[in-house]
Image (cartoon, rainbow, N blue to C red; front, side, top):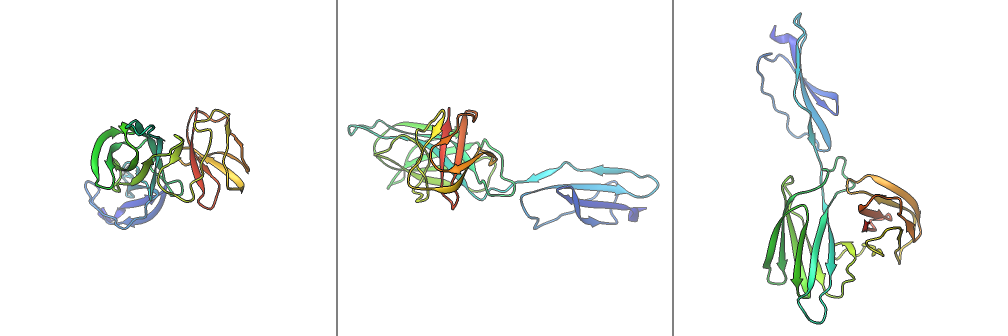
Length: 238
């Protein structure tokens, strides 16, 4: 009988709602206003003597409140147009419940400020522009898998060419040498502890918050150094 057929909505494997009666051959139901950062699945059970059941694929609803550009900026020298901007990747929000895993693909756009002159677009997970004069530039990113379109401003000028979280962030901590193979140094801040996160937001190293930090055992890749109180920096391990 129809009243013996129940459809359950599971959140992270736990039933949070059910509907009965439903047609065991076809049903359409809708749940709105569900929180992000969880997995969801619909399961149908026939509790009659038939004892049949069916389930839909698990759907993961990721969260991504913000993203950071991982950039490498090389200064122009001698008044020439020989500067460059490299986008090494996008760093997902590390405090969300279920951040979308990288790599993020989409279209990068570079505009020269203040007139927003188009320099060029690049499609993929990284981008690079060369032959740039000193000045301010706006990098925009239109991701394939997200609704938001983050952007940031970088400056070609007296740059050290260090890998950094781009943008004028007063809490950004400059790191050197960057890239590094063993030791990572920083100035101007002391913390009780330092955490190193990979691009998936996983903690891969924890140590005292005193410079320098030994990162020699980390695999090659891009990492976030978190010194607490929103102080952070990005480095490239070779």
